[in-house]
Amino acid sequence: MKVFLVGANGQIGKQVLQQLSASDKHSVKAMVRKQEQLDALKEQGFDAVLANLEGSVSELKKVMQGADAVVFSAGSGGSTGYDKTLLIDLDGAVKTMEAAEKVGAKRFVLVSTIQAHRRENWIEELKPYYVAKHYADRMLEASKLNYTIIRPGWLLNEPGTGKVVAAADLEIGKIPRADVAKAIVRALDEPNTIRKSFDLISGETNIKEALQHV
Image (cartoon, rainbow, N blue to C red; front, side, top):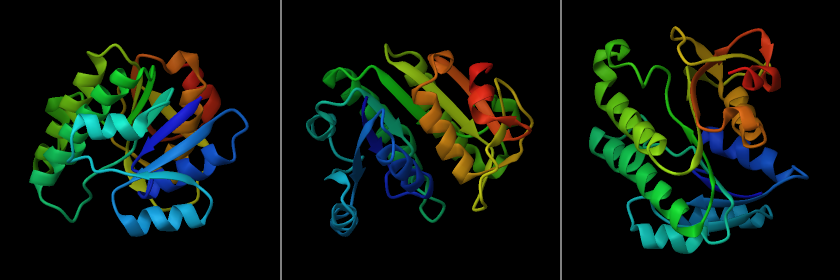
């Protein structure tokens, strides 16, 4: 598949980019929002394009042409206000879905957050973030895309173990970003994850097997 990666400069996105670039099954085009990011990726030999999630659907469609699949791992980050959370994590994600449908991409993998689907479990101080993720997830579920929604637990900058738990409902836990990236790449090739949404935390089952039984 020709994979279009949104959020390629993020901590998870960078690892997804490396893994897809090393794959013999897929090619990848990385989307970033800053010229210096674009220049750095091109210097490393990656196929990359410049676009902004606050731009129009038509602009996203233009850079996404030819994609078979889209991975959305972008986020506004913890240093911005909730206005950016709405503009990037919600509206940016939905505009990416709309662009994907317009260019004929069938597959869409979205990185959400653990328990985004359960309002009663939202952490009070993070409610606007959960709202953005919740409704982006719902918009994707209502689309015609062959989606996979991965809802990882609290993210760690630690080496991946390759072992996870994946299920529709899990208690809040933690997971290395490296394992989330591996799960994203694996999900692209796992038919069992199509039109599935699930929480993902560290566990005792290898990623391939966990996604086969989600």
